[in-house]
Length: 467
Image (tube, rainbow, N blue to C red):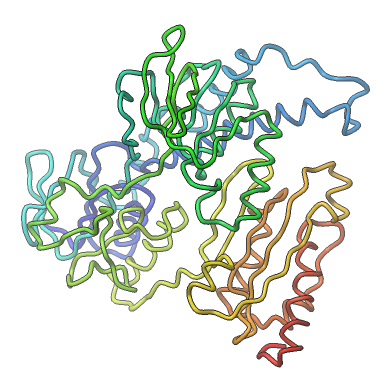
């Protein structure tokens, strides 16, 4: 069969592109060996946010008397039984891993769904399920897969990838989480909320990867306050059987930690191996990612495109959808280009850590003359009325242009109000305009007002644009 477009991989990016081509009257085939929708609806975003919501609700219930919602402490019952209830809710929201609804929806739009592992056999050809599909344009949207850290003996102990942790019904009394990025932090708080003893091991000097160091330190303090043991600057070296069939992990500082189970949250790698890219003369980067230009066209290729985690750029569902939108526009004759300056990043703890643009360190490395300002979120009136955990907002401005280039926050609802900074960065809104924005009282977004005025004043003193 011959199609205008063949899309390999039916995650969010693949669905978007194939559906968009079919909606416009083109012919599209969507190749997928697992589930339509990819990881997010079934083993990642939806189940993780569902289990986190249950853990957060349980934490709020613990504070019900403190917040005036009850005259005395409310009994929460057995932690393991509550976890079972949370798992049932999680699995229901994730449709128990059944992609039937998504598959039927994409088919109704006119997309030909082909089940199986697609392999490129040459220019214009993809082999799948014993047959061959011909294409004018090919879109690679194969996503990513969990990284398995190089820990000697890991195969001899009970261990889950993050995907497995978010689909298994088991309640471990204790876990060791290897990796302090978004997934590791979210899983740590989720399990701790149900009374699981959690040790979070991160080889780097801070949690949350390369996010603002102060905000990352606030996140570490928050998690420690939840009873989570955090080991920064420590890497797992060996693993072996522990007490009662569990695991014992030795760290590179010579210490050891033991738990019922190890959870691997060391990141994900672009899934490009074994799909036949070499038949097109395409060589992925060392990381496995495909190099793409600003149109999301694979470098050096006229009719090969890529979107989503497979590009190694903005590896989030919203990033994948953004690239898919660009690819779709270009396949339909447009000339859309990408701009990654304002793609939000969120760790969905409670409160969440949200960031967009550059950190101060990244901006300086890029050669920008920066000025920064910070606000204490706990000073906002809304923090007092809500009895919320404290946090902070950090803003980074480019002195030469008089605009915001980065923001990071830890605070209630920060995943929503970070978008004020995202719009400002993407639109290059002058700081004088931002400093004049009025926020409703009482909201957490009021945290922007003082630091924005400080930035505008600092730029005025230096005679910078936008001041």
